[in-house]
Length: 260
Image 1 (cartoon, rainbow, N blue to C red):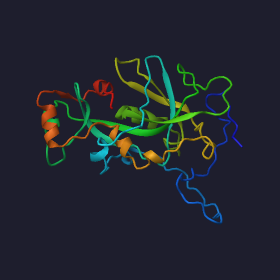
Image 2 (image 1 turned 45 degrees about the horizontal axis):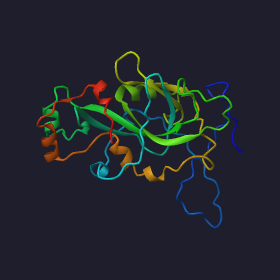
Image 3 (image 1 turned 60 degrees about the vertical axis):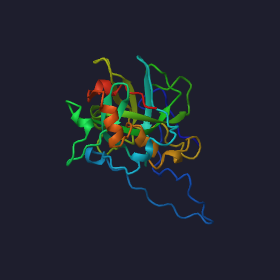
Image 4 (image 1 turned 135 degrees about the vertical axis):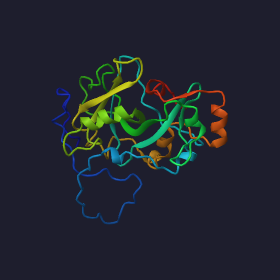
């Protein structure tokens, strides 16, 4: 039975949030059901938890990516929640005019051409797998009148460090960024970029785990999600890319990059 869903209060305080974990989509069904195991409360995410060290990123751009990005036009609002169990990805990136976002290849021991061509260094970028609510008002992000069950799609969202900080600051004591619904708008205080804020202190999708949530299995390994940070190039490709291009780490330009 679907949990109560109150759209009259956008805080959604009346939603009954189950404490059980989302069941794995590919786990075999045992002959005899095992006793339910206690679920530990989520551990609040911190800056130290948001790291990027994925050996699959080098192969990520070589696959067909069917993971859509969260996109909104001026004046629109997207509403979503981070998918639990899928770690947020991070990388340092450069924006190259005409090429988009390029993952930085420099290390603490060696500076690559991507940094040599940039006067401000690389910029932190984050990407997360999200449940995006599709039956909300595109202007406000509130659920449409008459909605009793949220409808979601699997998408990815890219964020700057300041965006990630705003989301972290939106959580309450003891909460994780996976516990809240998030609102995304264009940032009216500058020409480009987005603003993120809390839409609700509870996830609207909770209670739909076994009935109405699309499968996240195709994205569980993080490869397609990691590729949404930017293009990963080898040294030869970097030299060719930066031979006649100028890189910048301006957040406003990086936010414009539309990855394939």
